[in-house]
Image (cartoon, rainbow, N blue to C red; front, side, top):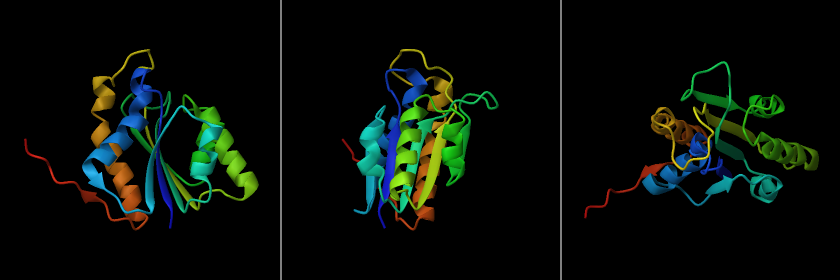
Length: 164
């Protein structure tokens, strides 16, 4: 069983960086077994092909643009819902991920299952840092990633708090 937790986004565009911030928090706060890789995919596209290929489970944390939901809303999609989302051009950099998923399907290296943990951004303006509304969604998004890992049979262990 090989699992990839992939955070994608551009931290220079405010809430677009939510996916990267979620996986940073995951790595800082939790211990994961060796079969789980955590990767900051930034705004990469086809460069992620090898990292995503032949995974038993792919978990993606990302900003997801939707006019139907309020900023800060958590969206969780699974398996066939994920490529469908990218076909609807909803993620700010979905073109790269859509291309990678299509290539993986074409080569027979598509992940066994996919979970997308998305947060609706409030701002995509050039600025470092999340808006307060999206920052408030960090904890629920992180818990959704942990739940997806646990559903895949992964033991997620909190790190001990360090005392200064």
